[in-house]
Image (cartoon, rainbow, N blue to C red; front, side, top):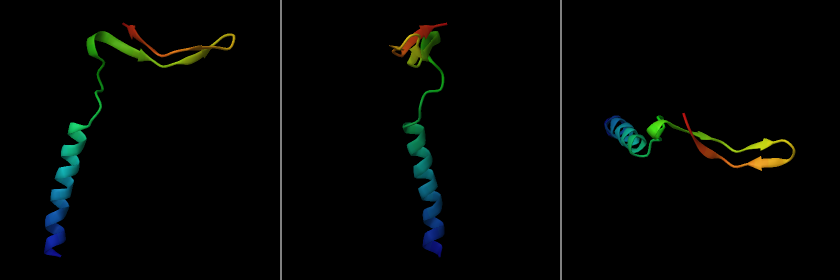
Length: 53
């Protein structure tokens, strides 16, 4: 039981470190926003692109 209680905090710490290193960036750089692709009329696919605010 002592081994398990020692490994749980170590595993949580490794998980936390892994998510901080591989996390996604939530704030767009330089005022840009990604506009995803969408269907426009009539039957035209518009690719995703960066839009400046």
